[in-house]
Image (cartoon, rainbow, N blue to C red; front, top):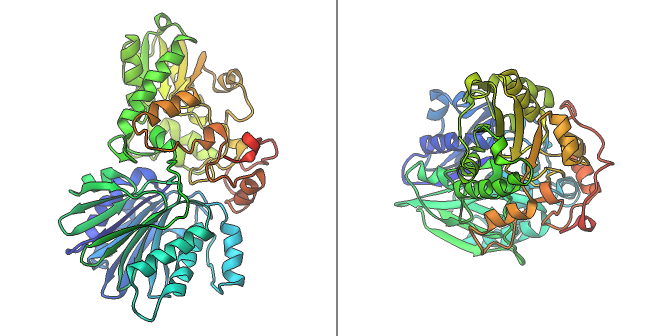
Length: 500
């Protein structure tokens, strides 16, 4: 999960891209980068850290031009600690090409060998985004005719990319002297939308990025579709995949996206309200509402679900945790030790809301269990008589290979465990999970035109249909071994014969 943005304007874009990245900061806190184009020359600055720390006045002044790209990085492949893997990536032929990518290629290792042996291209990092850039560059080189490049040639190159790469990818690229290219994988797993403000065009991961900068959301880029934006702001769309199926990642609605965004025609906020309704129905069969004194959300993504649940069951809703907004999201912090340490730095209890009460804590999801265990203990330390925990999402039982940091089964508290075993591990008095089918129905009802969702971390069904245990183990071999929790996947079992 990363955040990407691209802009073509008639005015300088450096400040606009910076502001857009601030609105995407929740999607990645490891590194940030911006590239702009003036004439046929690219200007780039990128580094590890948050947007506000990476860019100073001197950096912004060195980014001239009327079109550009930006990315905030959350590493799911390659080396999480390498500044070299911050995006954008650049290659000088053909034309000069820069690219930002949100997603995860599942055949990156095979492509790296193919690029070296057949295409004679050199990959300098462990990043799958650099692999994707070189595949795109090679396909552009095959269709280009001298210095002239037409939109039809660009779309032909994207068709070649779709045929070669597998996995999830939302991509924005700049082709020096020609314009901006954006495209999305044939399943639409990772989000990408486009908006306009006069003659200016912006492409971004979430609609909030457009609206927060005065752009009007036009539509989502469809699965397999490509968009080419010329320097004058004119746009051209074309479907470049032979076969498509619209299956966005359901975890975007559960946790990743901002609640004020609309992704693939679905309001994230409304999706979370709906999850609260279905969670309320699950709750009453486990814990009678009259045994609950107060409903308290675990900030921040769970608030809509917790409020809806409390209202439906007629229970008091209270804020019991105060969040330090200057500490990053614990889910996307590398390493179990860092996550555990950060919980009490990030959250502090309002003791009066817990003392002597039976409290129902509502979280958006439970992934590794580290945060949940700490929070339950914090509630007990504050004087809670009983602590119940409800998750607006089902148990996370399987690794995610499409760009979310759930790489190994050993890191997932619910893998190969019953709900009771998870409850004992976390230490709460009752544990209530959302049902998988209810979750899909609650969110899917908001856009019946979708084919379905990628919910692989919940149900083990990988929508691309090409994921096996060996695929997951091969992808994990390239991950940074310095993180805690890197263990064997031999106990992992995928349902439905390993495919969708």
